Image 1 (cartoon, rainbow, N blue to C red):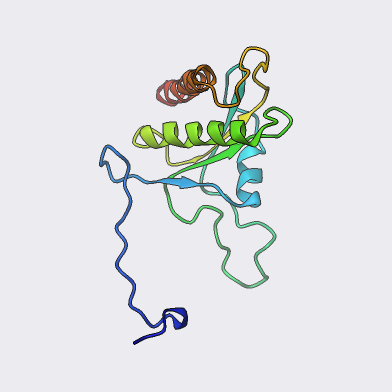
Image 2: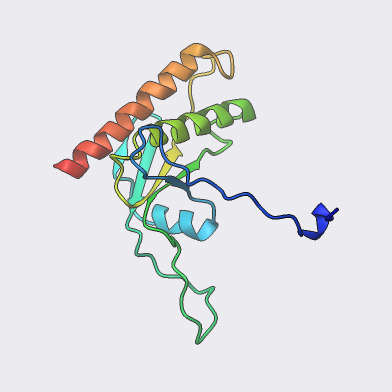
Length: 163
């Protein structure tokens, strides 16, 4: 019998993930600091009361990390809709709230992946939600408020794109 730790077992082929509508477009998550810095270098293109949305083209340079003489590796290797989330503790003290907001952003972006441009988008929480109004960190009222505001944010982005 082969030792699984040695890596001798064959791997099952992985299915290509698609969005729920089956359009074939996949949402990519921004994960590296250089990617976030590139996107957030410019001013936000869309704002709501609590959120700001930054947008940048994917033709970003590789940066100073590439060794001399090596071919530069782009920040965004695949042309796709890239989404990142920045939720400072300053505006969402509880981890439960930060995680709920993050999940809402990614879920809404996944729903609209077919309409999103092939660009890098960072959604940033820019002010906190009133804790006296939303006592629970993940109340249904807070989820509905966050969802409605994020829908407004993405709708404004798509309107701006088509204008």
